Length: 174
Image (cartoon, rainbow, N blue to C red; front, side, top):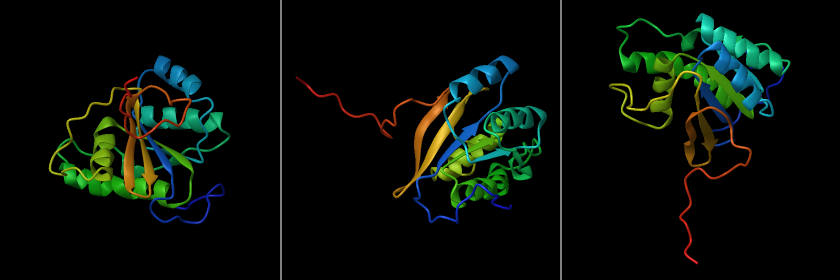
């Protein structure tokens, strides 16, 4: 994959790239997500070859003056494709988005591929999909921090306005 004109030089792991993994949903959800993400800039938008994935990716890219890039690695794949094979096939697109200096990237793919990327990013077992649910029209936010890939948000409809923390902080007693 060519990094493209808005890319910076390749970055080392831990460079702070935010990677949004989004599962397409209904047309109404698309309109709602476009509004919810209106202030979220993406330097790269990758699209799986399926019709809903392309539609969602193109809408997000168009709203930011970008072109969605096709990513055939993010395709749903055969029904009987082993989970580990799906991970191996899809991971290069994720690494491309993470490693080419994009401050924030959006990857639109089917849920089966999102689960594969999620499992690999968080070093979960690759024999079968993790028991994580991501609803249609929802996403997962991973951040490439110095300590590794960190789950910031899961099964969400919109980004937070504040930067927040990766994990909940304990409540203080008065």
